[in-house]
Amino acid sequence: MSGDLQSQVFADKKGETLVSAPGSINGEGFVIKNLEECSVFILDYSSEVEVTNCTNCQIFVGPVDGPVLFQDCSNCQVAAACHLFKAQNCTSCEFGLYTSTQPAIAGCSGIRIACWAGAYPQLTQHFAAANLDPLNNQWNKVYDGSAQEGGPPNFELVQEPTAYWEVPLDNFGPPDNPVPGPDGSLYQPSAAPTQTPSAPGGDFGASEAAAATANGFGGGGGELGGASAGGGAISDDFLGEHLPSGEAATQPSGLLEPAAAGGDHPTVSDAKQRLQQRMREQAEQEAEQKKGLQASASKFLEQFYERRTKSKEERIRVMREALEGKGNGELGPSGGTEPERVLSMIDFSLSRPNGTDLSRFKSVLLTCKSKGSMPTAAA
Image 1 (tube, rainbow, N blue to C red):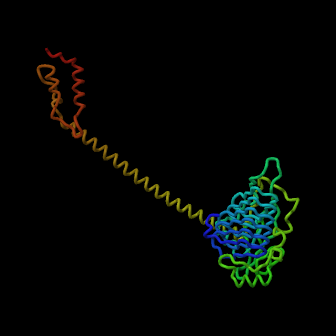
Image 2: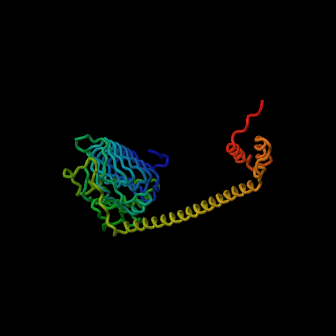
Image 3: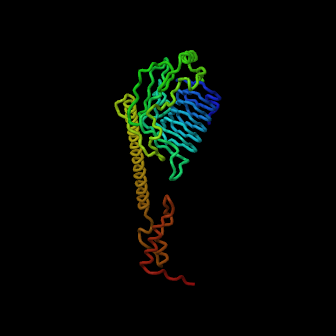
């Protein structure tokens, strides 16, 4: 994983509950590896998350401004929100996803994929901090890199809304979630008490709540006691009882389009207003740039025509001066012989500013041509 020196780590644990609360990560990376029967809650925004070799775990990953990678995991229940999602060599795992790009799996089997259904305090703020658009969820456009032509898919796509995985926390406000469900419905907070991280089916015990409050969840992603995944912290299926087992429609290439969200929710309205404001500001900037370009073009043309006019006037002046300096040719030829008359037509003293006046030599030649050839000089 790139940036490991700045990554926080949950590693080599069994039967524990591990929590990083809001404000404990602040955009750094996170590594989760070698866990067994653990419940993991990453409740802050991060830059990238890598999960490796986890078994029988429940893993909740808040917004990630980058990739989330699962490798060599089995029998895990996951909620993850990210720009890029990939699962490799995973078996019998369930993923509730928000991803702004096409999710990918490779070398996987027994995978079930549903729309993101997670909620915790400050989640909407973390989506904004991770540069994720809640309305752009590509969870159902799955790419299976190991699919065989004519063979069964390696995953099931859950098209129905699933139960929300709510994670209430003390002193952080109520859970929220800006991502619409697969049917376009928006999250409505439940009346559950805001004490400790929870999933559909149970809350953490009082001892865990006390440990969470005393530790403040730890700046580096602290651990909350020794509660095991089977101790009531997480239900057996965080996706809820609506998750079908054998009846779920399968979609090998992910052709279903995500449902559009309604426009009455405050999050949707705020997003539209910000977009309109950005469009207005962009239009104003473009108008100013257009005015500047027009002024520059007008000035350039004005200078161009001014230079052209001056050049033309200078050429006319030079021609007039040349015409005013008349030579002997203007008086007509003189002399007893034709060569003498030719020589009399040439004014050797006449010069032009830019060189010899070749036009007068041309005139001499034309005169000689009209009067006949010059006599051959006597030997």
